[in-house]
Image (cartoon, rainbow, N blue to C red):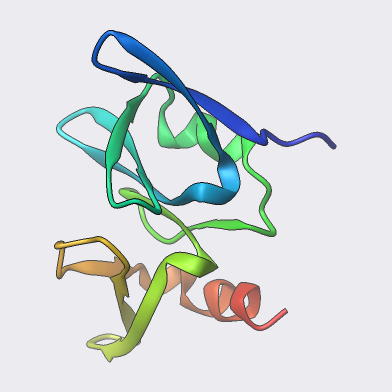
Length: 114
């Protein structure tokens, strides 16, 4: 199966081609979807998280909850959290409430540990 290797992102009036390997994570915020890249910038995408799940390589990206799809490279820290959940600290993120949903914790650990 072929997965996406790059995205064309809109930066103001310009278009920019970004390698999937340069993307740390995808997140949704106020009905829009963003890609956070290694240089710390975020870019809006014309995809939903559901559409991204279909075009991204599941070896490289994991949907941790309804708001985030992360790459292993983006994970800075993992902290045990209440109700058998995990809280993640992601590179270039100021969101302190990134939680791996309870149903996905085991699958997430298996994905990291492959």
